[in-house]
Image (cartoon, rainbow, N blue to C red; front, side):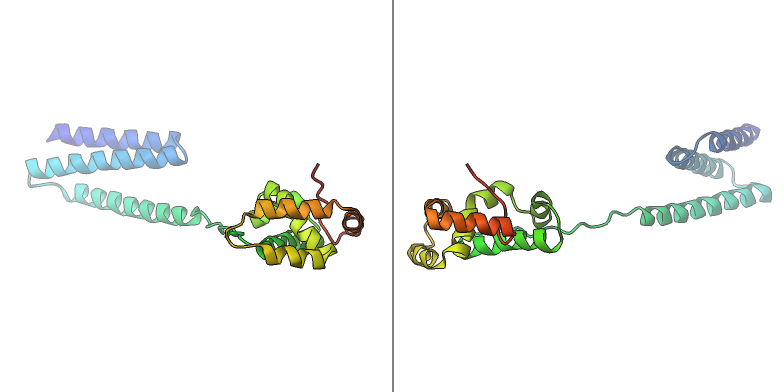
Length: 197
């Protein structure tokens, strides 16, 4: 019995020293491991002898109450550090020339209204830069030469690829009256200043 009491006193002293030395997370981990060791040892002593002094029971109640308060404070701490959920950007699936124009205009509005760079607008909208660059002739042709665009759009079918349609629009954009109109609108800021060589 005396041996168990000495072991308990030794564990309490080592616990106090550990609490004084360690800080932060290491302290919490040490308290947990020592507390479980003390509980296991106290349950062994309860099994081996049925009588204990009232002083021992009071001190074990104090230990349990401090452990309970530490658990609640840890829960509060964990609640403070919960991660915020970030908004997932819904990526647009572009299948038609109209969808491509709509996406182009979204980027253009971000650049004009919020006065941010094109790269930042792409990032905020979750759009790949190369995709916008490759499909820019669709929106440029629609803005500068709507009659030609309407005739090209009428020939577009759901099965056709936007890449081919974009290349067709690029060939019309490179023709002289349209090319100067596109450059003029880019200088004014009504079109994105995207240049593909």
